[in-house]
Image (cartoon, rainbow, N blue to C red; front, side, top):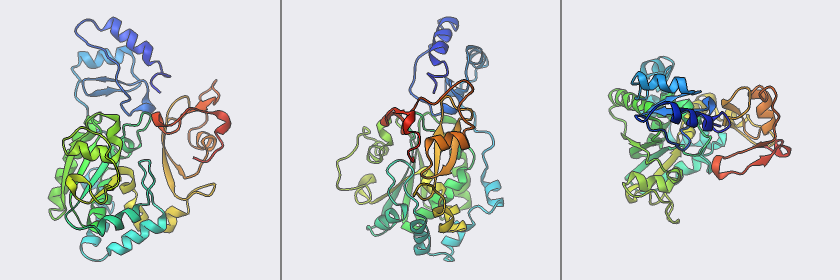
Length: 347
């Protein structure tokens, strides 16, 4: 998206005009594709950047990532009914079987790429011997992907409540949250909200926020676990699977952040609500990170099984004026460039 939005010209202009005291270098995707092109001054992302905006940030000394604006903090989330479900679980008004069954009936699957049924994963890990650990993957290193950042910058506690419910249902002793290195502002926000959460729920499992290693491969679950353990992020040979031998050799519940984000709503609104969504034979909802030459880029929540053409027309307000759909890239770098004639295939 940045290349299409003029990143090469921006690199050339900034390299020429900013002087010898500023180093300009290319970096991998920073996960803000809906606001391309993006420059990062220190740790401060400059969205829809041009040379004037970059120079302004440098002159102002704005090199720290700001906290996301508009994030609903703990007090606001609880005022809207947040954590009542978790409190019901801890108090025994809900059973683990009830929660897991709801996820199974909703057909909630892993939303980080692999699509493994969430309820089945909870059962597998719950049946393993204690102590059991949990690892939450928010590495989001796939170029063109930014849905996890989008949700966390707005509703961090919706994810955190789902995480605590999962830990309670499975019997987790400690939780590791692995956050993408480029999300410095989000890391500061989560650190503050985790402190508030610990004070509000001292009986909750220990939660440790880990900074990602900055490597694309660490988005793979076992490579992420190697990184959390302080090793080089490399995928493990399987079997044994992470659910059996994961973090520090213990059974581990591994989830993408968005999977946990939906737990509360599925339980409160009913499994049928989630399962009734979908098109072309698919069930559920999916979050699509859309960038490029569409009129409305961003994260769009749409029925599972929607086609690309439907997604663009119904959620992105069509293509930009003067542009036609010629090709698209689903799945980031691990996908392939597909022609427009395949835009009617369910996603």
